[in-house]
Length: 93
Image (cartoon, rainbow, N blue to C red; front, side, top):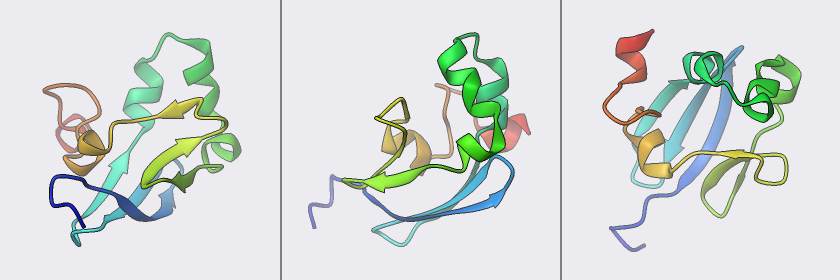
């Protein structure tokens, strides 16, 4: 394993828009995507406010993705539980 590369190894839905992520270094984060989805003005992103559609995520090449890479986030942001630069999602909730 290259220590400069972080990969997601498991992802489990723990609430309507919360996903528990485990990374290959053992770090675990519960990320609440709802604030990000609610703030988005883009219709393709807002479409994931539909709970069944949101639940259709998967891990591909160590990354969390939806659809045909329609929605994905930088792994480092998920690792830090910070989907928007400078904003901790735990603090925003």
